[in-house]
Length: 211
Image (tube, rainbow, N blue to C red; front, side, top):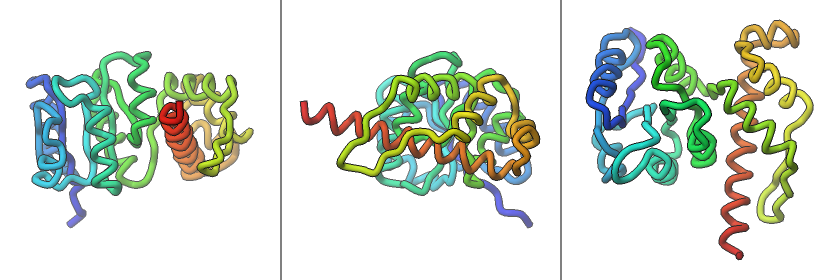
């Protein structure tokens, strides 16, 4: 029997939380091990649910999703986190990537897309939507200094090319066909882009601390 992906949900809207719970538990290959209406006492809740993937709401009372993500990544670095939000152009989405999330989805996403995002991060992928790709391109077009504290590189030409195609709305499969590479190669590049963003975020934090 295939192994179920263990998922914990953090969502303060009861109807959405229950909907996600029913979706995950009702789909073969997935199991919801915890559904919480807030991210307070996040370490205790993660220890009790023992998830492999967390579906995290950005805006919650008390500890918000971004703060919770940072704490999870500090204490449980092997857990994958998919952020969820209402607005695709919300700046908090980009901040959530800086906090260490592995991808993000819109709350209006169809059930299949939600399951695909969970499965993709679990299998080492990094879901990225057009708005995130656009924000990423904007960041690196402005130029980012290289910190002495950590190895840092900007985006290479292939990564910029892939981001531009994501911005245009192309799927990973269509991008792979256009560039004559495998879908796994596209996923590999997107995952590296997320890693570069994480490094950039740490550099910004170090810079702020020195001021």
